[in-house]
Length: 444
Image 1: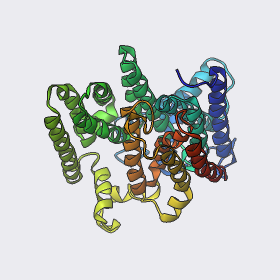
Image 2: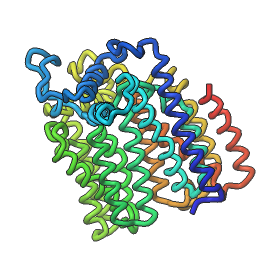
Image 3: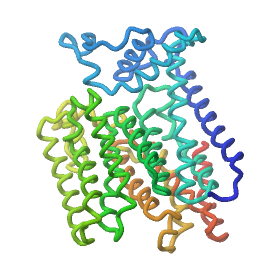
């Protein structure tokens, strides 16, 4: 299906990319000054330490308590209602299973570092697959994987740290790849795979519904603009169904009323647009798509004032647009605006985003002035979806630096357009003059 690269060579590259990235991330975790093979007391701090403790409870067979009075004493917290526990239960459960099967058990902190490295590195082969589907070229997939794997934002926070994006990014990458896989040749089992992957994504991180809403927004607008919106309906249905399942079955999402939050509203509206869109004129679809976007924005503003469980998130996001001083924010919103959730600084932008910026210029140079569905790839609408999603995650990264890996993930496949088979030699050489320095900066 894809160009002339041998499947065996591609498979070996993907395996090597995954294993190499996992080794590098695990080694960085072991080399950290706080890491110890004999004492795990000071490896993790703050919120990450709390989640590590829950994972260790699962690993010991004790399990996560229904009420934990050691957190927020004296009233305590209900972990299953307060936290997304997919990482804790999967990592801790794996370590416990090793013991039950009589297999060698490394120190628990080693299990944590290795599993996080292995899972987070799955984003690389998934990116190669996604890029190959976008450009109909495994060469593009290889180039995008190299760029992403070497870019600092891709690995800096997933090297031993017990952070949600270590699982969240590869799960979102799986959803994106399956959406494109289903777009190529719709099949019921492919639709169900999207739903299953999206459910895992939603229960892995409380912010996953927000990220899914960013993915859904360009699809909703596209349904309103395209003369034939039917090919774009399935991912909107799948995301809405997945959130309905996750929000109904998962205690933490249910307690936070995610189904009636603005992200839940966006996904539900997307399903509604997908259902009725083909039966409306293009003019009516455009009008209702923009009305839906306006309602989503209004819901964001109202939720920031209404004491919703996500109110501090909405308040922190809106503060970026209002230039609100931190002293005027609530404590929760202030905490959500500091550290990795703080706005990106000019120095960080130059240091960490120069690589994807240069690489994107290379991709743009290769396709500049070319119209139609061939501009970014042979699949038309999905390529435009990735472009708009990249713009959305760039905006989010500028507001909150923690999301820079997600932006780089979307930038990488777009940057590899210069390797498409139908790009001329002159354009390819000119693009190469930008892409190679970008790769060199990434290596350093």
